[in-house]
Length: 163
Ligand SMILES: [Zn+2]
Image (tube, rainbow, N blue to C red; front, side):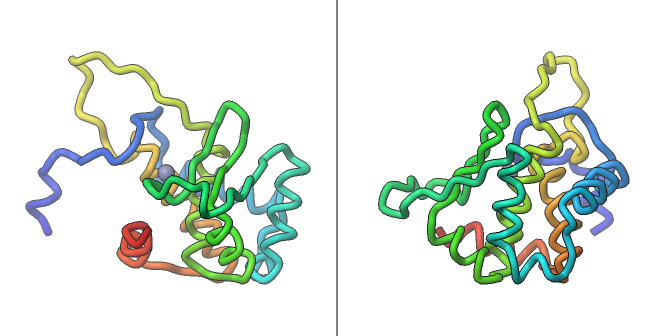
């Protein structure tokens, strides 16, 4: 365990502006307040998604037969749109914890305004706080916890690997 601390962080996604855990949580907290996220949200997930659309965050389910299964979901910060396979969307709407967590992760990318930032070769090695995926995970953990869901990271990774 102690040894791993000294290894350079393996970045999983785009390198973005650094945000601390506290800052991610602050933004997630504001998001939850704005959209009234509570334990009830999990059981009214479709209504929550509908509410998001009134604030220009659009979740667009794509028929599974047309979905390219290289990824769970795609988010486009330019158009504020999240594309998900219909099956995952339906699972989320029926309260499935992992599907909800996946959607919260994508919402995190939009709310945290993830855009890749340019770094030159002399930049310091990226830290986890600069990893868009890490930030979106932290955001999702906070929002899902507000809905009464707590998933271990490993569970979600296994789910991501299912396809
Ligand atoms: Zn992501």
